Structures are given as structure tokens and as C-alpha cells.
Length: 92
Image (tube, rainbow, N blue to C red):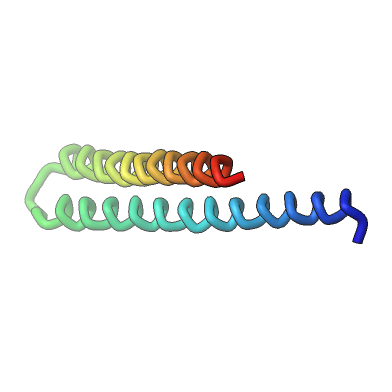
């Protein structure tokens, strides 16, 4: 295989590997966010005698908490990926 083709293949292999790493991190973050949202919704629905506007506010807050959790996990994952790339560059 020509050298240029090997380099391209190596680059695409690394891109594919990083994409799968990112996709796994994304799925984990979204799942964690959904779990947080679900727990908060269950907590909000425990009191059946509360006014509907309070329940709606709690539900909106639950969704916000889940989205925030997912976002924080994605930021953490992004920082981990950057650190991994830095270490990989040092080895080369």
C-alpha cells in the first residue's frame, strides 16, 4: 500500500475511533441526564394535592436539571478527550 494511502487510512481510523469515543460519551451523558430528569419528575409527582402551576414548575425544573447534568457530563468528556489528545501528541 502506498505511503499516502497508509497515512490516510491511519487518519481515518483515528477519526473513527474518536467519533465512537465521543458517541459513547454523548449517549452516557444523555442517559444520565434522562435519569436525573426521571427522578426529579417522580419526586415532583409524589404530592398529589399540590396546585398544577407548582407541579408544572417542578417538571420544568426537572427537565432543566437533566439537561444541565447532560451538559456537564459532555464538558467533562470533552476535557478528557482533549487530555487524551495532548498525551497522544506528547508520545509522537
